[in-house]
Length: 171
Image (cartoon, rainbow, N blue to C red; front, side, top):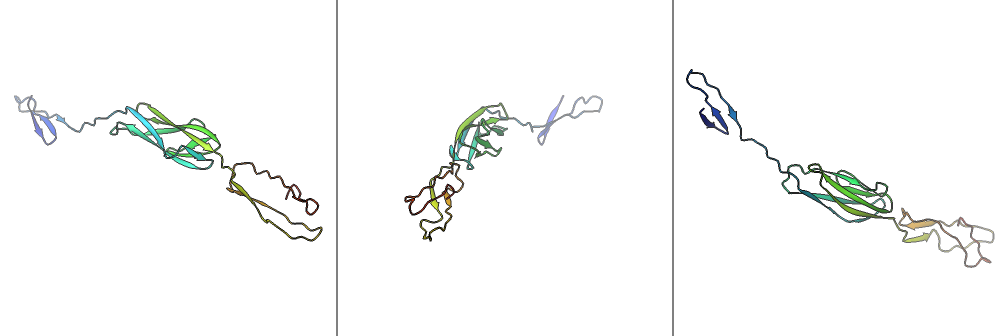
């Protein structure tokens, strides 16, 4: 058999004795894949509040691996959820392990995310003083900082001088 190269293909002239010939074409366009050998995970921050978010990032090794795709999962979706783009959202106070699993080879890596409750840092009253005539009332209300705190919002009302002013359990 005789071959010659034409562009990126090899051509086989085949048998020449009878004047007929056959052509076989070969291509150099063979795609070689590079297998995944591992994965690592990093987070922008590992502590978030309820309702807060952070982003986790997977780094597939080697960097030239053909399939860089990972699937994200959470060990405790009641504490933190993770979207397939790596955005983690705090759901309730606690900890959750966020794991990346490679599509090629099922390699895994994880990071632990701690979700803190939105802790009450202060309260304020709608009024800090009032002048009233005997027998009249004023309704006091409480504002919380932060307003969306997950801490208890139970308030115990009291008067510093019950001979002058009394306060109900509702303010």
